[in-house]
Length: 234
Image 1 (cartoon, one colour):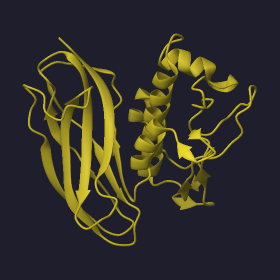
Image 2: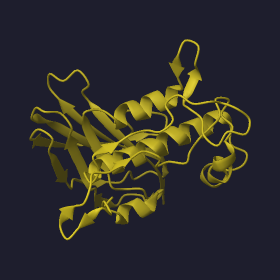
Image 3: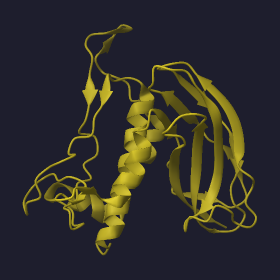
């Protein structure tokens, strides 16, 4: 995923500054799991690399949702495609299928909870993308983070962006953490803006979540949240 930091999502149909045709991107993840949490045939080696061969079904489900949401954020933020569509919303779950859907129960129906959480944020009208995928950071340093905010609605969006750290257990406040950065933003209808807030890394080693939250008053879907898992070392 760290390769995304060097990519732009450029549409290859662009020619000499013009679009030759509109394009839609959909099959962009290759992270398919059976409903019982085991990888499909195409995805087995992917999960062995991402979470290890001994991972539990729930660890795979969470990894699937986390990385799929990040890829969705990336392609939406690039603004290079006419549509970003998720491929397998409802699919077959057979032993030798290459793909599968993300339902925990198709009879009710009920989405897998990790998928509903992460992808529910990734596809909100106000999109966030944090161009940061480093798995580790040294403790106590400071760096800037490139955050893209997109507005896929036909109304201007105005609000506040917060950038801060949480513990990996979800605790909103951890001793020694810097207070979240708070930035105002305003984006026109169907617009995009980029901010580069600076934030100190936690001083204590451990596992953390870099959390970016964009809040807009009066919007039923507000806030939008983007997350990055980071291990902070000495």
